[in-house]
Length: 466
Image (cartoon, one colour):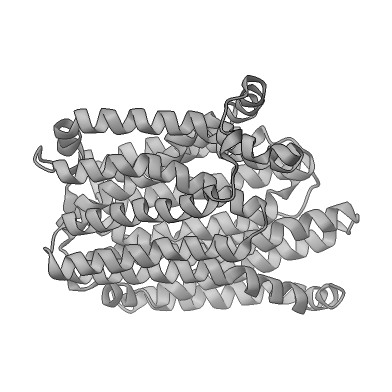
């Protein structure tokens, strides 16, 4: 067990560093900007979230799959993989420049933000170069340079954004300009670094190679688009159904949740290879069940502890964002339920029936659309948070039940208890006030501990054997 924790610590350095830099940027920006201005800036964040799936066409995943098999044709593979996404991104750049007034109105509520649109348009090809260059470094197992360029992008974003906010103007433009320029510069730096090791002679299209990659990549696009619906619908609908102020509060709350999400990312990085190693060595299913129970217990308790410290959200974001305190509880279900599902969904991977993931995404994505449409007009940012949180609860249960069906019938009672306690606490911390909400969470933690005591001895025996 000690070795597992040590490995997790090593894998966590990069993600934690990047998250902390992003968190510092958000905290500084929200102390300077009003929720309305930050809401306008969040529309650029939304475009950045969507852009990779729009322009890369999952060809980066196809490139990663074929990298080792390509042998001495890896340079040729790189050019073929990046060619179509780069062409699409340049077309999107041209469209954005031509339609800058219309896009400015859609994103920022005015037709006069041409500079912001022009800079945004250049982030499209930059995203392609950055994504494929990172993938090449990853496949070469060059962890040092991979982490360096990821952190560099965040450092540039922090310096440029805060610098512009302090020296240029205290508006969303400073955030957009800073983020866009950092994206472009990061792509330039990593592109030069990677391309210098690639033979230009291999820069030619191979119809057979390109066709093989497309056959793998294109079926992944629907799942990618459904995943985008699950993660981005809330912000898009807030933009058109509410105000920029409500959108700014919601986005700020979601940025706070990103700190919790890094824990989920670190655990997944470690758990996936470990779980496959256990499966290949025919480890008893009781070990998998134990991990599910331990992760479920600690994830739930951690979430409740975050609720007990929820007033820190107002201190981190600034006085203008105090209302975000009531928005973030349901948003916390996103990383918590995703983390718990990473222990239960492995049966789908073991059985190689990954097509079920499309069903999971479709069900949770459809629920997200419906809930946002129903709740945002009534509760605004709170409604979007409730929709996101409940969608990820559905996501967890869809993954869990399908995995249980195709793998083995692991116990569900503790997941039912965890889910009920989490949802109840989310409702209480969203709609109630006063000291009673904290007492409710303390009682919930006490009940969880009591519920898990009978399994403690068994867990201790199994952990000693790891």
